[in-house]
Image (cartoon, rainbow, N blue to C red; front, side, top):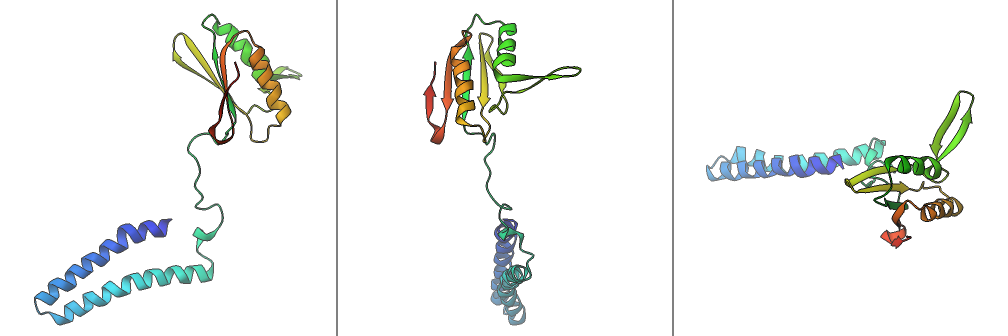
Length: 178
């Protein structure tokens, strides 16, 4: 990737400038200078590409290693999720309790209780579009089993606080759950 950028933005303009210099020198009948410019126009890409081949032969070319130049999506890589809107009558305390009871699990500790994400849930975030609507995005972990997804899905659907729930799945398929 880096070599492509260097080639495109540095090498090609340099060759064009050298070619213009060769044309200017030729028009002024300066054959020695014109020949030097033409040789430079040819040798610059030859040495650049030859250097790439030499680095490839020696093993210094990192662009061929898997994972180095892979494209990665911007944002969450978790494809499966449930997006939930709460009823307007749900209070902040109700929404907080919903998060603790359904989206988290309680693990007893010697000094209290530890809250972790429920099995299959990797994260969840609250976003507020307006003062009347609270939305929760609940992405499933990449390694979540179908049983874990079904359990979370059923608990969300059966909650009386939920106005609507949508599940996002394979290939952008959206399913209205409630």
